[in-house]
Image (tube, rainbow, N blue to C red; front, side, top):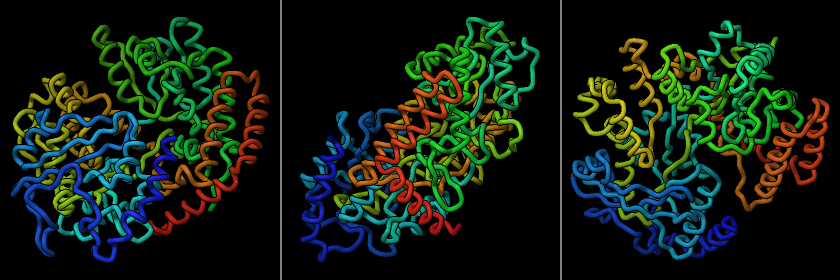
Length: 552
């Protein structure tokens, strides 16, 4: 329903903007636009060419809409970090919240010609609709004047974000120029030691180990797949070189210059057969498809899990490690190099992935009175000073001063007050719209290396030793999804429904490997009936366009 509402609103856009196009210049406010919910105070028009907006020289106020059902923006200035920015940089951000119906809210704002100044949203085809309708401001004239984004994201990343007209309209969040990611396997250290610390490298090793756990620890879950059984997708990588869980969501597997059927991929089929075997023999959690995150957390933090695989197991692994060590110094968790099928190259196994483009994006609409000033803020926000403050709080508490690279010099309190530090960091999680992954990771790692091993952060240690080395760069597969209301978008939804159904049935209901294979064969037939080949062709063409953009 919401997709149809948005589609209807988008259909009105050309009529709403066309009458004034001849009177506009790129990047200026639309002559036909009514004032936004809030404006950039004290700056009625963009800065003259060659001038640079100095953040903090005058008040800047703009409206911000998070285009997610789940997102309600915290009060700007209600935490120490945004309060510092509000007072010292004179920036005030006015929330426009979705009320739990994001797409409908956005559609209403489009139809009423009352867009917010900034929209924080998915990096998808819907952004291109807004761009094509003339509602967004390009950033190209700002990139050299405000250099943080260009410096930290790099030309390749920015080129991947450019629209079909060659211009840049999207400001990325949690982009990176270095490998990162958390997917992998967490192992209960006490159980592992008590079982003789056996080799855990291949799928055969894993199977034998889980059988030992079941026999000697009847109250422990041998293999925990996490909420939504994400660990099953993590294990997909074990059965084929250069395979990653990302391909399951992409619903296609690269072979040569084409994307081929996931249902027919030998590695995917074998991974579901292995998962079904673990389930049938009660070596895997029996409520893998119905449990929630709280159930998983309780099992991990109480030590009732032997092996835990997931797309993001490090946070829960760290929490579980702390909880167990408080009761028993010999307990806890550690991570292992990703499991692989015997005969495969262990250095070509990628349980997870990372994308240079990061997570989502901010776009500035032509409702903004001074888009350049807003860009100047976003660029400062993604730079070293902005990141230090929004992640670790204002200077003086957990950091004091910065190195030549901009990395904060952490204080002793950063180590001795983890509860207060984490509380402060958590308070700004929903205000981190322009995260700079490379800067944050490098700052964190640089500091961790100065600490003794027993003082180092659990997550950071295993990220540096294992997870960052074993995540696939999937940037070239970005932006392959069609718009939801397009023919390919409708096909994609149908194929995804088929995939989710067969994935669960193959694991939970099949009585043998042959039955798993038969279920996948039928899923392939069902997918082809609804247009799977057309969808794969669309995604292949989009992928090949990406390769041209990044020069591959």
